[in-house]
Image 1 (tube, helix red, strand yellow):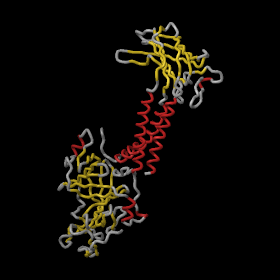
Image 2 (cartoon, chains in turn orange, brown; image 1 turned 120 degrees about the horizontal axis):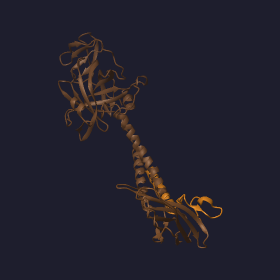
Image 3 (cartoon, chains in turn yellow, brown; image 1 turned 45 degrees about the vertical axis):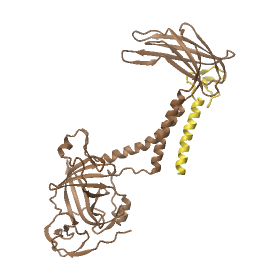
Image 4 (cartoon, one colour; image 1 turned 180 degrees about the vertical axis):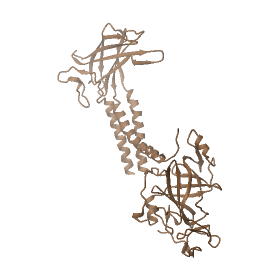
Length: 53
Length: 425
């Protein structure tokens, strides 16, 4: 029973984490976007992106 | 626990005088002496009926008199009958052992390709009651019957003759016997329709746990048969936990897809340019207030059987450039087809603040009959847009786990049916 509860928690955790990342828009920038900010070529905003501004 | 020995009696072969045990209960009709191969009438003072000659003893892990358990029921090996079937220049061999139980009567332990199965006669009759050779030859689909509320599908058929007979039987075997059989497989049981020419009988075969069965009958390690291939009745018996994992993974995948569809539509429109001629530039100011999610800029144009290319620049409140991108739309249509899209969306991660996006068409071309260049365009901005790829990824991982379990079952099933002589051609 404990194993099953752990598995359910794992699956729900995976879906929950994916939902949070999705809503935050992580890695969702279009590849066509080029940042014109100095020192940030090619839209390299980093994981979780703080944005271009 | 070993089965208690049957109430053992003995007699001397009326042909050769050898001492023979009687193991098979009151319904035994025939006793074939293992020494002189004489077939004796067990119900008429062991009168000699005939004598078999030139029989080659088959390889089998069982001997007459061995006792053991099949699904907890005590059985004694009382007879051995080897069979051969010829077809298309090939030969198939197997060995049937008649077994007897005080409580469950007679049955068979069959040894084929190193697998040991248990069969018993049944008085239940399938519907239809028989599948003839012509039905098998002329059917477009695999024939099937209903039996005990289960569908049994055609597996194989043939004609077999004995090659060896020894011990006690509840019928009168003969080396001249020719049995026509039709095997049909259900979930984990095989239904055999056996036609001897004189009568038609039905048998149900199941596959006991092999190590337990052989241990129970005391088969020594060196006599254990080496199983070849997957037995048709060797279905995957999954543990409840494995089934739970499979179902949980598939349910999780479905949930991820549902949530993904939900977040894919997330976002609020914050600016719209309205339709503008493509010969001028769109200047669309907007304010991002949402800290989470992406900002989506959608450009649409009324291109028809043509393409159009746009440049866009994004500036902040100080009119400093923040980002730029180039995107194109292309749209083609015919009498019964269409391809491409008149709109294209671009996502960018922006912190809260005021921005302006400038959009202008830089190139366009008609490259299909009846084409028309884009004459007007529009820009829209949404904020709080999600990136559902994470949920598609979670769904893919969970779905893969579930489908691996399902695929394993499918492959196992294919291997179980691989010995069938049915062809769809």
